[in-house]
View 1 (cartoon, one colour):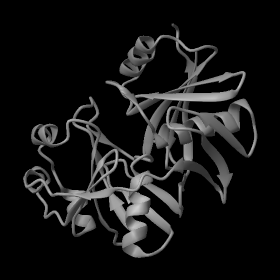
View 2 (spheres, rainbow, N blue to C red):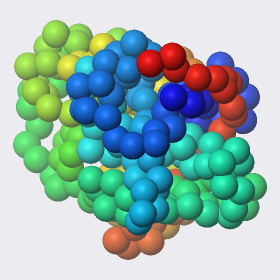
View 3 (cartoon, rainbow, N blue to C red):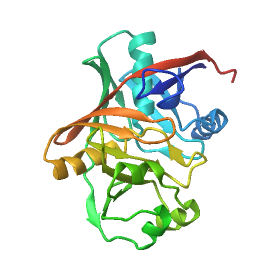
Length: 257
């Protein structure tokens, strides 16, 4: 099985978010894909397969299958457009509908569905969990938690055992206005073997419409303040969002299975 590893939302290795990409000739059993993702021990492993109707994609963390992943889709598009089928764009079918990766303005751009959040009551345990003041909570797939500043987001040290009680499914995304960008965030999912995701494209399907309504603009520069860090160039287009960044090929090889 042909295998690639790509650092997404960065132009240099050892930063951004690493993704494994497995190129399939046909779809294996789900259990096999989960075992491969667990063995790879990366935030996400994408499985891509080209059938009669075009490219298809699925994503697995080391612990479970995801419904949508931005950085592994960007990494997969990077591999397809540079190493497999040189072109300016590719469309991939997924459980979250059609997704596109395009070369655009010197970046790779994801064309993803918008997932606007709705405001929900603030669980008083969240301030204890994150150790920061909470100004609002907003739910889509993930729980968006608004706080006051980028420094609070960067320096927080969450209580992950308490987080498991608060969000039994998917992630918690603290966010705040940026100092040298429009907004910042981090992404935590205490269910997973890798609790903090370095740079999360799918959470920006919700962060983009959220910050559009607060900042009254449609184009943003966003930063995810994990240890590896990453920069995302974002655009709101109504029912869709555009999320752009760079990518860097780290490894190309073969899985002996």
